[in-house]
Image (cartoon, rainbow, N blue to C red; front, side, top):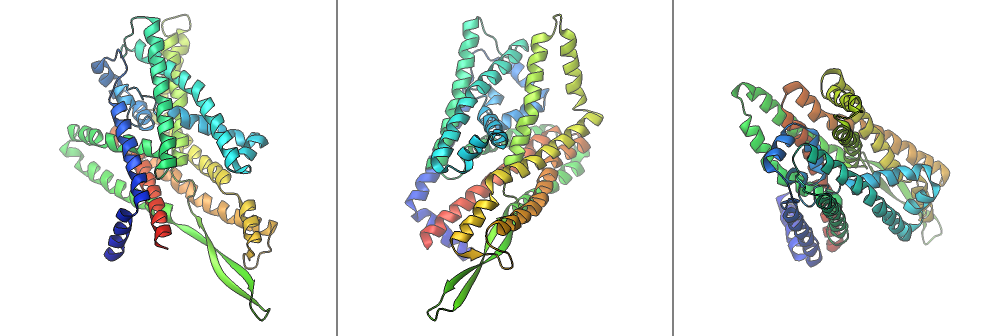
Length: 430
């Protein structure tokens, strides 16, 4: 085992292309952290710290901003608008055959056009989120602007910062290793870990040592489970038939690996994005309508948000989150794994599944296997996603909800990067 690890390390440091790719990702990380440390004009840091301490929602939004929201930095929106636009575009592939053809049937050209549409959709979403955030923050006294021109300038800065991060993420995908958007989220998570640890240390209570030990064990178990499920796969046996010299048929058996969880951590990111959007809109409406003739609407929104964080409301919130993760796991698997295309590829290569006729029967067989696997993966992913919230509800440690979700995302991103590095090393070795 250790010899294999040393061999992999030697191959890694001797591969100039791979080193350049990893170096480019590290450069993107450094540039992103510099931008995340520069606040927009007019921020009151004392009010900002107080405002953040009052809401767990901002902690989740800070994950998707890559840590930029905590400082109200130039990149405070992070890749959130781009993720939201991606969700909307992928949902549209279900109702629009044209978009589905662009995404899955028209090759690289179609995917480039699909991504162009996603970038255009990112603009209005970023504008709405920037205006909503800044209005709420100004009403709370966190951001102070002296004129409408200053407000418009802040909106322009925030939107430009979001587009800059989107561009950096795409560059990291093209010239680095792994998914650039996920890597930016990962960078923010890693940067926020010392702050989460310090909050746990400040709130440390000797009477809660059993709770801390239980949470640590739960985190280790969740990490192990995520690694196990992410790496688990179901081999589907296939046979390549080819002619021997005597014109008799000879077959070579192999298999197609189908992962138990093909969607990775994307369903969790999608589900959290959808859950936080109503909260952002509600906070914006509360700040806008409070004190006027529509104050009753603001009070109703505040009561609804308070209900969702206490008692029965929090249980309903967990259930909605669980169902969203399960649904998005099925949805993302459906748009990334095409049994029809795989059956065609096997048939063109002269391969078949033993006991299954080529063509449509093979596609139905593969679809049935993927559906059963996705059910197990989706239920597991939903359970592991709500586990931090359940532990927070049981122990009262609010930091663990944010930290647990961040842990799940970070583990999945690390596994994806390591898998791609290992694939690159295997190509070089053979």
